Image (cartoon, rainbow, N blue to C red; front, side, top):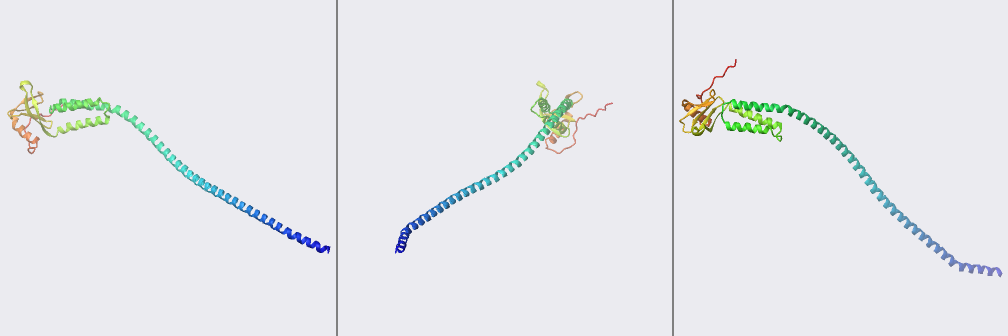
Length: 257
């Protein structure tokens, strides 16, 4: 009887304790689920941080690669600039040497230019006196140019050669120009006829007087026997007639012993 009562008591105690055990298991399960959720949230947060770090790492890597490319480009650019600078320095050195040589050449050629001008002046002074004003002004212009520092030596040389070329052309052409012969009451307007630099003749406007430059007397001589020759020569010089043989006073060349 006593054992039966004991079993019944234990059974009753088990039935009373069962709900408490189930409740404890439920609490433990909920706690486990919450722990798992927290772990998952922590893992998700960690994954996000990892993803963020991964993006930053990729961005930094990309920036690093771009920096390397820029550094390589700058290095190549600097190498090219260095080459250009060396080339420019060599060119500057070459230009300095050339300028030094040019200065030396200028010092050597300038006396030669003065000799050329002096020779041209003597030649014009001893030549047949045609176009006196034009030729005198040309010589004066050349003389003024020689004293100018803003005119290069090459330009001075070119102008001198040009003057020589003009004088050379006079020797193989026929020309005419208007001018005045004589001074004061004896002055009269005439037309001059230049036959190269061999002869210089003249004719008054009315055609009544003619003459020529007498080289021996260094003066113009009246000689109406040349009127027809001057008239025809003027037509040729003015391109109103074809070239023809003309009668003119020509001096025989002098033989120097």
